[in-house]
Image (tube, rainbow, N blue to C red; front, side):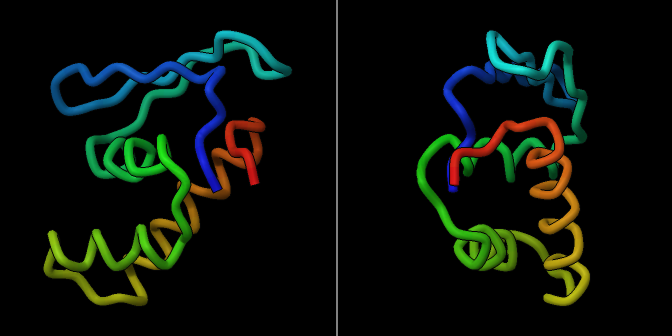
Length: 85
């Protein structure tokens, strides 16, 4: 999966802004820095498992908690049509 090229991201302090530059979604998404890291990883083709492995290397957190958080971010991105699968 990969973030669609029609979505532009910008890091601003402790949050990431994502704006649609085309497609069905018209609006802006604000994410915290952790969700922003996941979104940044999705700028290149990546799997859910690769995202989880990368985040586990960086943060001390239980895998089940991290998996749920990654699934939540991916789910929101799917809802707005931001992912090419």
